[in-house]
Amino acid sequence: MAQGLQGPGDPDRVPSMNDPTSLDQQLGYRDTLPLSWVPLATPPPPEQLQQLQENNLRVLAVVAALEERHSPRGENDERVEQELERIHQKLDMLLVLFGQFLRRMDPSAPPRPVRLTSAGLSWEGGSALEGYGLLSVMLHPCMPEPFTWPARATNAGAVGEARFEPLGEALEAALEKHVFLHHRRSVAVSRPPAARSA
Image (cartoon, rainbow, N blue to C red):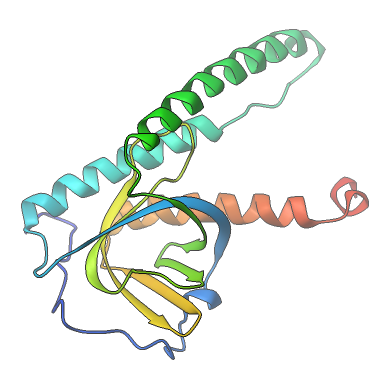
């Protein structure tokens, strides 16, 4: 098995929706993200897990770079920063259009409201996600490649969740950072303007 990775266990094991460590109790953020689900009868082989881990680390690194913005450090830098920001916006627009084009070519990944954590994601409403499979989620409109990993999905009435299989140390840390930054942004946006400037 690849170093730093734990292979998935029994694919027939079903997690309890009453687990005290429910995904709703973990740090996360809400978004509307394109999802796709491929049912699996057996866990992926170690070689595929290693490839998925490398792909996911690249996806998270690109998303982090796309979302990074630098604040001006002084008056002399302000005009340069403004020009760079305009270039960023134009590049982002091109990447968004490219990503939308690719997603139209794959209608199997419709966007849906979810709450993403480093352990998995949850949703409300009906879903065909059930059992053991390969979950893919598009994390950013400018990134046409999804985050993909084995997961176990369960539905209980109007609520469902998909828990990732063990991610490996590096991938878990990268996903935790992504979730934390998005959670922090969502909290900042939800605060009243007076509180933000305090």
